[in-house]
Length: 414
Ligand SMILES: Cc1cc2nc3c(=O)[nH]c(=O)nc-3n(C[C@H](O)[C@H](O)[C@H](O)COP(=O)(O)OP(=O)(O)OC[C@H]3O[C@@H](n4cnc5c(N)ncnc54)[C@H](O)[C@@H]3O)c2cc1C
Image 1 (cartoon, rainbow, N blue to C red):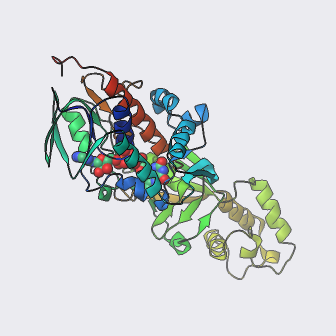
Image 2: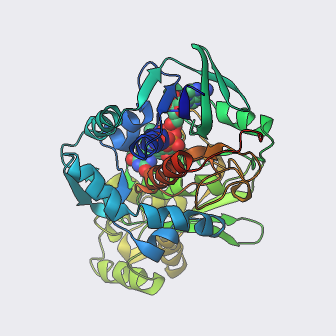
Image 3: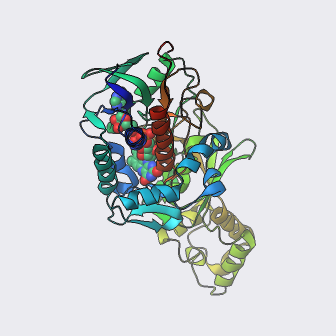
């Protein structure tokens, strides 16, 4: 008999939840983590506060994910919807609160309370946690070969995350393990990360946040929209960040002709902004920056006027109609050329991963590898900012843990 029924690889959100559910369901469970401590990324998340899920439920939740991922996620979101996940944490003493953009955070304002609840529960239900054990390879049957010795288990749950934010331990180890077992992996790229842009004139705006804002990623040649979001924008020294641009990062390709258009005033249409500027121009001695919405910081107003090519000595009284409309066009669509993303080192998620057709969405079992389960970010699943990625990790981990504990493997297979 093997030492463990279930070996879970990776003690992040998905692996911790999978191990808990497996042990609660009666499996002798070991959880292997390469870092000296579990849940490093949980501690780093949400600015150290951990936005662990969302208030969105049902189709509103599913529709937040790419169409190709919705059918796959439906069964696990049914098993562990956000409401049930919140109840799970609250039952373990983690008081939660809702914040802007439908985010859910611990009231304590510290991600550590989320991790403590997971680790304490894992200990209570009998999970054997082994840190400092980096998984090197899997020998079917299973023997898990780690930097700290071999582990025998009947079933294995692969929950080692993606390759973004490598300083948290996620260096993409899981993809070669998955490929080695014959699973297809879709092309990978960094997601939820800031963008480097070509526009030097905007670097003077570093530190300015525009909220509300609407961002749209489009092909310059055709004007076709790739993706758009109503989310705040943060100007940085090398480009753009904040939830809007970060959500778009996964749609930026290499060698790309992607441009980003920022609507700095999404609550008013072009004519309404134009009318407001005309109204403000009635004070004829006003400078041009003073005609722009007062909620814009002075630096932003000046940058827009400079971009519109309006000379510094122009006043409201001498502003030509076409210059005014150029200015309004910039307010409604400030265009910047995207050079690249800031890459995996800074990315919050990896876009792409183990192809979803390889995995049964009801159990997270690999269809062609008996006794192997896959969950969390290593899958070709990624959501926008707002607690959606933890929601997906917890829910797929939940399903994988239950199924791995329940399902028997034919000893002759695999
Ligand atoms: C800075 C930052 C902030 C974020 N904020 C949020 C947020 O607020 N809300 C949200 O929903 N999402 C957030 N995310 C995304 C979220 O952290 C991930 O989607 C989530 O952690 C994925 O969970 P996972 O368990 O699949 O993978 P991970 O959390 O990455 O866990 C995988 C674990 O496997 C371990 N591992 C890797 N290789 C091996 C190996 N060979 N052997 C053993 N162990 C291994 C890793 O060390 C790691 O502990 C954030 C990400 C980052 C980087």
